[in-house]
Image (cartoon, rainbow, N blue to C red; front, side, top):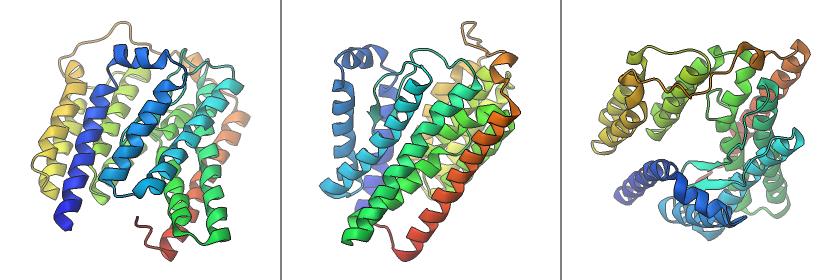
Length: 306
């Protein structure tokens, strides 16, 4: 049984890496997205099958899990529409969640934070609906969905891009992003998931492009961490594979290549009134406390294992 679990865990990591590479296929993705809703449906179905098989969730568990991710992404879509920012429909990336593409950049850090916050807010509401249903019918599937919904949205609030917390933390400067990067690395060792180091790579690239240029050696850190992670947990294949994927993403930075077309936001982008910052920060911290406390309570009353 243990060997089978390890095999499926490795498979899910491989699928996640392939999904990251595949997500760069702009031509194929663009063709799919031309048919309204088709990209969402196809990617949703693929993700559901992947979770069903690799994580032993069963049909209803996989369906509920994917539905919670969809609810989260629709929170972003609705928030974007509210502030007049055009975005695409959600596209699912197996084992990495889902994404929406912005057709234009937000006008300022306030709009970016509002759009980012829409996902965790609606996602948290979806998780609490599952909690209410569990209280009503006692089916542990709904308890699990409630807990995993809390966890999905709590994870997304880690303050580092491309996670929602990083988009929100744009309001408060890159110091929050460094804390988020540290949290991702620590979490990768706590839950034994090296894929989180890839999120840290994306965070470094965002800091470099949006705040200030980083020394080249900084981009070697996630490559080394991926190797150390693999050696520490005995993932002698996945460790080097993760390190290689990290290297692919940061190769240009290590060579010292600079993309002149890369957008650098000026200081005016980050100018937001103190009152707006206070409100958004309160909502952000409130969500973290609410989701964290509820998940902790649910984990204490059940093993939460599917």
